Length: 255
Image (tube, rainbow, N blue to C red):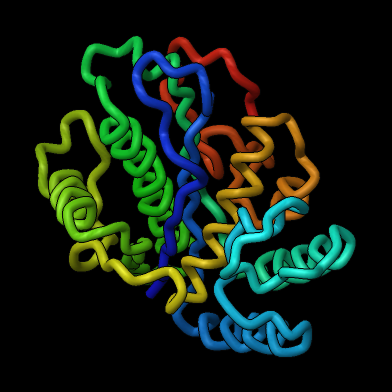
């Protein structure tokens, strides 16, 4: 069994807004037998650094002084050292994979069937689930045994949770003429508060690194996670580890 923990970076732009240009959802894929080890490493790192609280990408901004930020009083150097150790946990396990969807809002809103922030979210989530399915198929072929998976996402609020569950079911149950067949996914979408999920917290960090690359052109932390991004046999990330939406009309960087 493989667990795909998903979380987003920021909020999709509204129609007509110039910023943010991109919306990212990342999926951190961990084999079930590796989850305990990764969880223990993160918990150990937090204890060692006296980090008491939830791991969030936005907390690492040097100017972030939120009351709930466990790094209050830390300077930029200390925050960056801790962040590097967090990403080392992700990339230090070769069985962990990263997939992500990146939507360019302006290009997406040119499509007749994308008219709202919810549409942006759904289209971005869709390409993440597809890459997870493709990875499970790859693993099944390589091992000779069917590899199954479940998706675990951050709890977003009662109304949003219901919409997300229904959208997920729509994906896996609809006519597959124009969509992927999700033959390796089990059950519906699982939702959990992020502060209770190691996987969702790590996925938030990954989404933040990818979002920073696309929105600001800063690849500092993106380069830290490149080893874990799903790739083609030729090492290609575009379309494998990171799926762009929409491909037609895309004017942004290509990973």
